[in-house]
Length: 322
Image 1 (cartoon, rainbow, N blue to C red):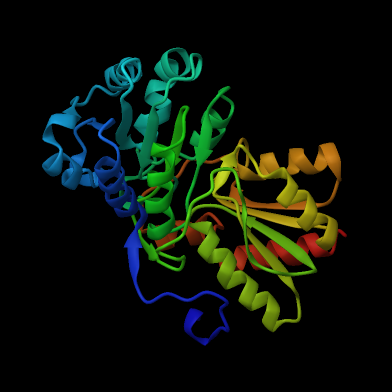
Image 2 (spheres, rainbow, N blue to C red):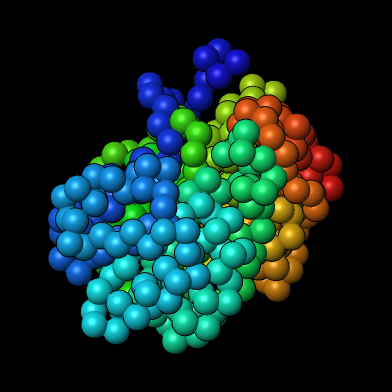
């Protein structure tokens, strides 16, 4: 279907966003000798092998002891190191929330919590390894920056950018091969939304893997005479409220799209912003109060309503509420 649509963005290659993290970490390490890597026995899954090989003295294998890894990372910042921790998103948040809250966020430690296999799309590993609550957990922590890039190139750029940013960061990325459709030379601006496609009838705010689905949805809507504006919210906290308010002032309604629970995710952040400043109808595309299950990424996105077809349906529904 994608091949027959008039897409505003296209791709020739697919690659996992976790590889963008691995390549970005290596480049950040080459730029700054204070960048160090820590991993909880998942070097291959986190694509940290190249950094480990080039900088063995700056890499620390903590084993399956995620809470300890967070404590070590917090301590390293005291002497000026910039630690990047690596494990699955479930273990980067749910398993170690107390350590992050007490040892990192509370004192604003310069730790970069890098979380792979987020959302549903890690697929066959199933509900115990999937996490759909992590954005909410992390954005509620004072001092924490929350970033969820959309493809390999943007993840690589974000990884390099957070090495230069002072303060704790949660960087979320994934396992599946995904379209690469953003500029490889892009400069990643933390907290600055990216208006990808101009539109006048409805705004689609998307994050992570769902940005590509929003691009496809825009083409479908355009073919039906509906003008959709697509905005990539790669930084969920701090949120670019100005971009949200300016767009919805023009379109009058919005759809949010994310690989996360309704509760606590991007949709909540957008809706709160509009409620405070310029109330407008919003429809969520996300997971509705449910755990995941085993399946391929495509099967799971379809079952849980996280694809272009669902974004199109949500856009039509919210248009009827204007």
